[in-house]
Amino acid sequence: MPALPARWLAAAKINLALHVTAQRPDGYHDLESLVVFADLGDAVSVSRADTLSLEVSGPFAAHAPGGPENLGWRAALALDRAAGNGGRGAAIALSKEIPAGTGFGGGSADAATVLIALNTLWDLGLSNRELAGIGAPLGADIAMCVHSRALLAGGVGDAIEAVPGMPPLSMLLVWPGRSVSTPAVFRALTERSNPPLPKLGADWLRTPAAVVDYLSGTRNDLEPVARSLEPAISDALDAIAATSGCALARMSGSGAGCFGIYPDMDQARAAAVEIGCAYPDWWVRATLAS
Image (cartoon, rainbow, N blue to C red; front, side):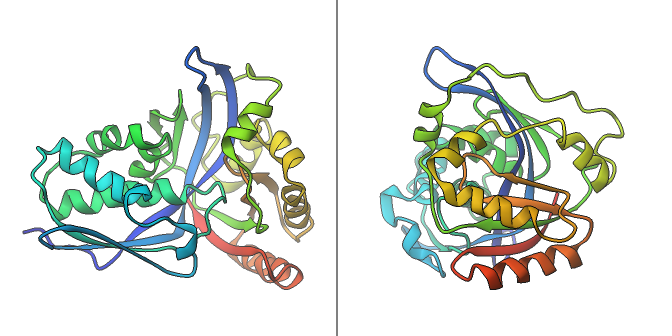
């Protein structure tokens, strides 16, 4: 039997840029996004058991449903079905360290990590590509979170291309305690056919400064709409942009979580202290992402 880690990190997903390039006939949107993953997130552990169970704990346990509505639970059932419907058992423990509604991929990261952990526990030997295919029908971000490394995502998030050589980015993550509905954000879009991401050059992502230079020519096309629906997003972005050393402040995904990029972790941590003191009700974390 393979050895199991004590805990698996369901790393927070950060959309550094997100371009909406078209609306499809099925109503979904074609997107292009440059994505990195933080060194923090929820935690998943699995252990052998005769039946399948899920326990949710942690500071934001109330933000996550238990049982059949939980994406991690649904991912476990989907994996069992894909591997032959053997009625496999496992005790899954999920510690929610990131609040819901942040745009940092919490539920999708949980589901992806459950797939990876159970693939090991059940000794299935499936590739990340196969796991991503199993998770994709449950949520567009799950495939990205299975890979959990710097990537370009296209289509509805299912066309994934690795971005090798992405340098670690010193970042600040901020959630101002308010959420926006992803369907509502997309419904409110007035322009759905925007230019794609600029093509990546060989040296464009070699250093953190080069990443920021590249990002200066990109957008999050959902940000203006999300800001109009939830003013707290603008408050968070203004607070981040005002901190010393902030090279870029932007919303992640469909919101309401925002991020800042800094020259080093000392400045990211200092910004976290500054914003955390000024806005004690906000969720604020410094992180290294790549």
